[in-house]
Length: 346
Image (cartoon, rainbow, N blue to C red):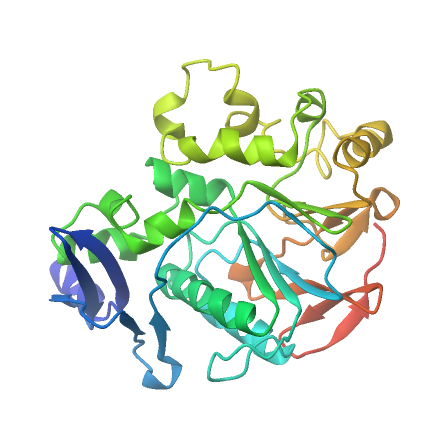
């Protein structure tokens, strides 16, 4: 019975594509209904396929990848979401319901900015498909004068560096079917691995400081600019697990422990940040508010600290799909039905 269950599980797997650069060629690997396939990719067009073909879409590979800027002017409208964690359908439906994309995955948000505050990986069943969709939307947004910001979270760093505690079992099985180790799927020879390594830890978008977890008092005192933080962190995205316990005083405040940028929960749980701590962060980075995911709180999407902190993490695996929207100078919470409400202070 157990063997039958394993075979049935493998037969139902759809995953990929995984695009990698090997021996001067571009290779594409996929798993469709449990069958793995490897082929050379010659035209630079990637087909992302689902068990339901109505969900399929294509992606054009980028000609080059550059590290993202970290500071941006304030856009007239923003759509901010976090902690997607492989919940592709919820993410897709949220974007469609709120007119960021249409049902053919075209960008219809004009000059608006889509901001993702970390955690693309783990738990959900469609991580790869979610990442390719964001990759696709980047170029479409730019052509329309908009922008897509992908800011990394702790689960993204965990996957890049080998901490695989929360990886959905499907992906271990998928890698095995393709004859690969899981860690090779997003390494420096892969397109998505290269792309992820261009992303930031923290960004300033107009009056908003956007990141995954938060800025602790420890970070406040380090006197780094946003650009310096990203330049310092980026080379270590795939080395964090290896560096645990080493005690690197330059790196640890950003990656290690409960006061780091990727793990801080002090806006919501004890020991809580004081009003002075939050105000100090606003002063250090010259912003009006801090936008974070990472910590699910009943009532999110919501303001905290009198509007200085905006918490946007919700229980996506419990089918709660919401985002924060900035439009006409006001903030709203929106859901998969396209409903919106004014964001309240908790």
